[in-house]
Structure formats: structure tokens, C-alpha cells
Length: 385
Ligand code: HEM
Image 1 (cartoon, rainbow, N blue to C red):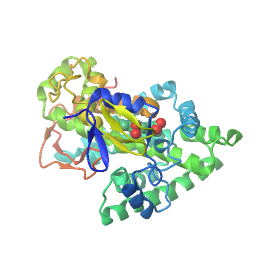
Image 2 (image 1 turned 90 degrees about the vertical axis):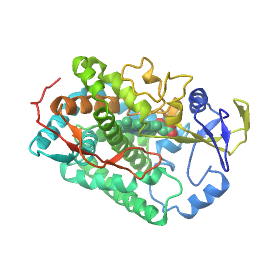
Image 3 (image 1 turned 30 degrees about the horizontal axis):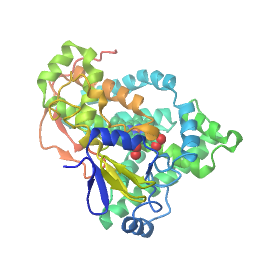
Image 4 (image 1 turned 135 degrees about the vertical axis):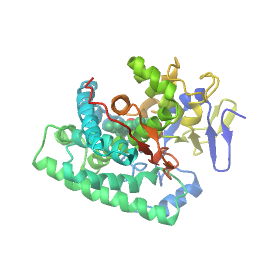
């Protein structure tokens, strides 16, 4: 197989080195649905555009390039600093403890995706972004409806569902921003609004798109990291035993989970000028699909790549957070949530086991479980670490 393979309409790569280089190359630009897609896909996108803020349409960070991208990203980074994220770790721990306390009163089998994996990231990101407690359920529903917005080839029914989610989210977000402007809190969203307003650095639509992406990107993906991690570890009791004896291995275990079950499976780039990629010529306007999850199993980089090995020395060489200009802005937070969220779950419920049929989400770009029935067993008391 070639390192960049031509298929009808698209090129695709699962080669780690090619993927790594394309993500950093200036000859490849992010997809901007309705604008720079190859013709047949552009036609579909233009005829199904509902005029809503969309993660793959400008002014979303994910679909713009410099100079706009630099401007938006600088603004978010000025608020989302390493220090601010490090300070969130305690909040992640408190939230995990609270959610697991609530599970403690529920002996028997529970769906851990519904009761834990979805609740933790939404509570954390909602705290950071000043979302009132009462709005969280609604946001989760919008997120679930809109999650397939990253996929191509939706059925009419799915497309309508996605638009309902995006529409609900757009209306809610505009009102939330108005509320915070009138009555700012000590949350990062209030700081983002203040930074955006200062000297008119972002207009209202740009601010909504940026804030909305941080909020949405912050939970749909992390839910899947937690669900994937719980399932993989329940199926590998030997790893749980090792982690119990050597908890310092948790960060590497999370990297290995991200590598093997990448919550974002792929991303795309549009060729900006005719170039040669690993011997394959591509032309301006072609679409290259970078299969992050495939590159994560490249045998030239990862020895015995399909094996789940929490001690793998180079597990963090995965591309699950992408690379280059668009490298995930929330990677540090996602890593903290994965580590604290999984460790706390297994410390509290060391006897947990799968107890029923697990169901996958029907999304294609995002990969995760929609339901994981787990018999929790006896709970241990909370350990704050
Ligand atoms: C396990 C969890 C997560 C995964 C796997 C993930 C993955 C990704 C990937 C693959 C991209 C880049 C896509 C591309 O290159 O086309 C990205 C971008 C982004 N992510 Fe994450 N993400 C996660 C969690 C988060 C969290 C918690 C936040 C926010 C708090 C977040 C915010 C963002 C933002 C704002 C971008 C756009 C960056 C840009 O385009 O400059 N992500 N993420």
C-alpha cells in the first residue's frame, strides 16, 4: 500500500510520518465546508448549509488559517493558559468524587457513559465557562445531537437532527454570552469575552464561534476518552493490577488509550498548491484525509501496534490531538480529565466489571461508546490525590 493513497474524490494516509508532516505543512489547509472542498462535496455542503455556526465553517478555529486563525487562537490561549489549566485539576478531582459519590448510592448495574463519562467533562467545561448548573443537561443534549456534524454522508434524518442540535446550541450560546456580559463571573468565558471586547478584537459572530467550539470540543471528545478507557481497562485486569501497584503509570496509560482508541479518528486538509507527497503527486484543491487513528498504529513507529501496553515507551507519539497550528487547545485539560477521571473510577470501584451489551456511538469521525453497562461492585471511600 502507498503512503498516500488515491481513492475516488480523496487521498488518504495512515502513515505516521506523512500524517505528521501534512499536519504541519503550509501546503495543506484546513477544510472550510462550502468553500474549499472538492466540487462534488462543495455542492452538497452549499445545498445543505443552514446558516448556523458550524465547527467546520468559518469563523470556527477548526476551519480558518492565518491571519484569522492566529488572532482567534492567541485570544483563547491568553485565557486558557497552562497555569489556568493546572489549577483546574483539583476541580476535576472534586467533580469526579462527587459523581462517584452519587453512583455509590446506586448498587447494581449502571450505564457508566450516561452516569459518569458524559457528566465529568460537561461539568468541568461548564464550570470553566460559567455555564449555570441548570443548563447542563440541555447542553449535553445539544452536544449529542450535533456530534455527527463532523461526519460526511449523513442521512436526511441525521442531518435534521444535527441541525436541531446546532440551532439549539447557537440560541443558547448567544443568550449565555449576553448573560455573562451583563454579569461577568470569575470563569474563563467571562475573561474570553473581556479579552475579545477589548479594542474590538473579535466581533460577536467570531466570539460565539470561538467560545462555542471550546465548549463543544471540550466534552464530546473527552466523553469518548473516558468511555474507551473504562472499557479497555475492564477488559485488561492485568493492567489494572499494575496501575494499582504503580499509580505513576496512569499518565502513560492514558496516552496508550488515546493512541489505540483515538476519540477523533481523522481530520482533513485541502491541498493549497501542487506538490509531491511521499512520491504521490497531489493538486491544488485535492482533499487529503489524515487518518490519525491509523497513523497511531503505524508499525514503523509503534512496535506490535495493536497491543495494549500501558508501559509502551513512546505511547505519547500518537497523533490523537492532531499537530501543527491546529494542535488541540484542550490537550492538557483532556489529559488531566482522562488521568483523574479513570484513576478515581478504578480506585473507587476496583471490582467493577462489564455487565451487558455495550453500544457504540453512530458517529464516524468521533469514536466512542454510547452505552457501557457496568456492575460496580462494592465502593471504596474517596481517595483525594
Ligand atoms: C480526548 C479529548 C480530546 C481530543 C481527542 C481532541 C482532539 C482534537 C483534535 C484532533 C483537534 C484538531 C483537529 C484538526 O487538526 O483538524 C482538536 C482541536 C481543538 N480542540 Fe481538542 N480534543 C480533545 C479535548 C479538547 C478539550 C477538553 C478542549 C477544550 C477545553 C478542546 C478544544 C479544542 C479546540 C479549541 C481546537 C481547535 C484548535 C485549532 O484549530 O487551533 N479539545 N482537538
